Image 1 (cartoon, one colour):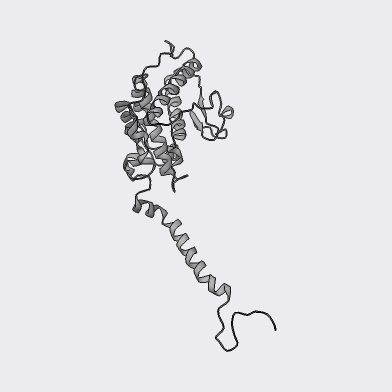
Image 2 (cartoon, one colour):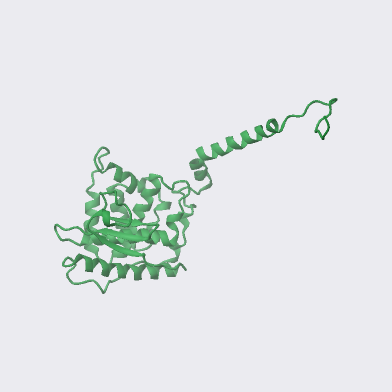
Length: 272
């Protein structure tokens, strides 16, 4: 048979392409699988996992470059409970001003949320329509802050904290903190750090506007008994325990700084 060949009849036959490539491919597959399986350990070893002081989220420039957040909110009505919608929209304008000033200190451009939706039912929100257990929700893709405006006792204070918490999620998004997910993008440990940081940032922003509001929020959070089999168990897994929430709210209220709200560098016991 004519044509080129890569071996001669007098020499040992060389392995085929598949036989030559297969060992290398298997080696790469084993390395890749090992990397995926051990990625948490590897991140811990090199210091990039959440909880490490060298991780990207724990070393964000906002922590060192900004002074205390917040201040007075001159636009708030005298009677906060008379018209909750008016109160919440006035607070949103103040939060925009507070966070724009803080992020500017770190050289980060702040853009307000695309929309603030004050909804009566979850179905009217920009996301989370199928969920029925939230008082507020932030939609990162749409960059919409949603707050459930509830009737009943007519108290606006809890809704004000909810608004500040969802605004904190917006700050995490526009600053890039929420993008630094590493291997824990959908992990509950990552979610707890994100949510507890939002509690702390909300308290930092509201420490002058609503100190009594924050004391009440801490009291309610600390009252959570933490029953592992109770109806709120799954919420605690993704948002943190009541004790942890109360502690981070207290820290944000006491210091008012973004740096004090660095949950990403905190030990696991503080973000449980």
